[in-house]
Image (tube, rainbow, N blue to C red; front, side):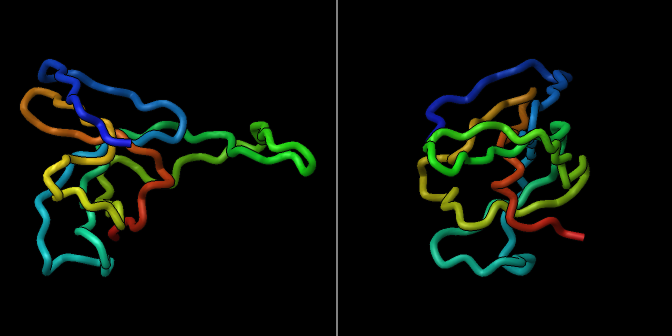
Length: 122
C-alpha cells in the first residue's frame, strides 16, 4: 500500500491517532546504529510522536471466514518519545515510504499501525 501523495498540515498542528495507530517522525539512517539485520532494504528508524489508545484485536470464528472484534482491549505498548524501528521495509528505493505521509510544517511524519513496529530501542 503505497502512499503517492503527502498530506500537508500547518506548523503547530497536533494529531491524535486513533486505535492502534502511531505517528512517527523518521530519523536519518545510520548503519552503525542498526539493531535489525535486514536482507532487503534498510529499516526505518523514527521517534514516536503520538500514539493511539489501543484496539480490540480481531478474532476469527471457527466455521466462518469472517472475523469479529474481541471484547478484550489491548492498550498500546509504545509511548511518545520511544525510538522505534520498522523492520523489513525498503523505504529508500525511490518510491517513498509504504505508509501514509503527513507533512506538519516542514517535517515529514509517517502514520503506521503498532503491529508494523519491529523493535523499540531502550
